[in-house]
Image 1 (cartoon, rainbow, N blue to C red):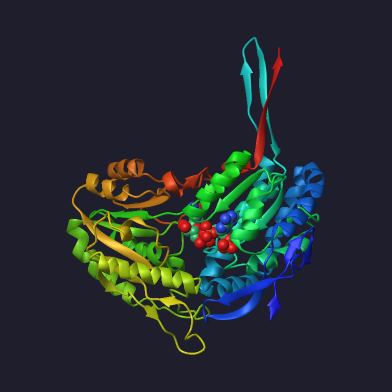
Image 2 (image 1 turned 60 degrees about the vertical axis):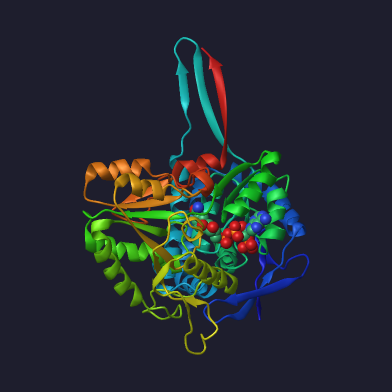
Length: 480
Ligand code: NDP
């Protein structure tokens, strides 16, 4: 059985404890590799290496640093097939999705920040007759990056790339559920010539090694993406230590569809925004609100198309949905479907586990599920399910749609479908969300601020926001 390794001080190494635990393949439900069960001792070693590397890395010219990170981006691109296969196997997602979204985006993340840093500038404020202020933005030092399982390398690199570009040394932890592509990244870092200690990748559980990263006094900033409960714990733990925190948390996004939208475009995009990556994208629109005159037409077409979406093993090129990420997650999603029924919901399609033929008969597959007839206030409509489950609800007025959309504790993203320009602006403006798409979904420009409001998080990633997060500003005044 393959044993994954930590990547510390530029080399692969076993965890200090020499303990490992199982890594499951969601498509088959079988164990296929072993994950280092790292703990505080591994974090200590990684921090030592990172501290030693910091003067070298932060002292390098921007051009040199940029070149290394470009090589890192190219290194992933050169190993595209290996990364695609690994991501799909580890996570259960269709290979086509890993090939078109996950791995190309990881390539872009490194390339984008490798070049963005060359254009990053700081402010100067001139005071007429008094003097001039100029602001410097220096790297923080050793920072922690903790990422979830749904878009493993995509989100891992979304944090690591700006942290490194800004001149920090990184202690990074991928989710224990999907460690494989983060494991492969070590090789690429070696080949790219990243100095030892600049990037350290530790595997293990959130409760043990994740917690040790959050609590380590020499790790000065934590960039975290994951669930709201974990985010709350991290804020409570790291806050009193005055660490800089960026928290990208859960969502329960609304998709508001007005009767005057472009029906075909809306329908095809809504299928994606509901079920891409088995609904395990923090930006998926899991609550769909439809203007009443369009409701029946939408319902019929949506149910008809979704019921034909093929659930299959990740390597099947015809798979629209693959496996969900783990047995416990599958059970959680299925329990929410039962809850929806108890709350009075009618399952229009799906609603059950899917059993494929051998060797996939124990894989974690769920049919894409559409539920109607639920109150917007019920738990199914208020709590994050994070699986292939959506609810549909009619509305009569714009005010009612907004009131329902804004009723949850979350505020990550939202989608609006209308051909009325004024309404598009108005509704987008009044949605409680950090990101809104009008007549589109998941169009991403890496320069834009990314993040949520309310329980969906604190801070923004992307573009200058990320580079500002990973640097410390100092203002210097000179009297004239
Ligand atoms: P978790 O919060 O369970 O885990 C996220 C990461 O944190 C994992 O690496 C996890 O490790 C680690 N972790 C868990 N407990 C601790 C701890 N006490 N201290 C430090 N680290 C810890 O989230 P999931 O992995 O289940 O991801 C799904 C969630 O992520 C959903 O809520 C989703 O909405 C959210 N998400 C948000 C996004 C955004 O941009 N706002 C984007 C994508 C997802 P381990 O896995 O080993 O337990």
